[in-house]
Image (cartoon, rainbow, N blue to C red; front, side, top):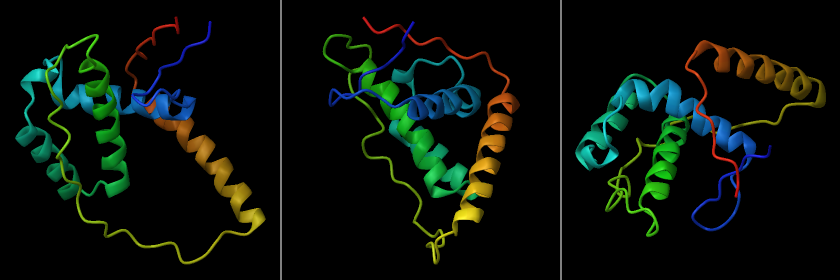
Length: 141
């Protein structure tokens, strides 16, 4: 069975995007906000959460990834055909300043292969470290 989700602009989310959203949902969003209705989480609470993640040392790009997952969920819930939430409080949420170091060089071929292998192993560890049961996606109709 093939699973897919369609974004607001009509394109399919890639499998890596869906995997990242699922990790954010199970490992970050659900532990943080629990089973609360999204309509009960206002923009001040979202911004406080983003600011706290930044103070705790999470990178801007990682925070942006978690925020993208939350925005995708809100986008789905706020579509005119669903109207589960009236509006998304995430529209104006600010990210921390981009103080990450710019890339100053490109890896050579051998180093790139080694990093790819490490990334695969790290990705496998990340998926198993957050031991929440994966949420099944709805089959594409």
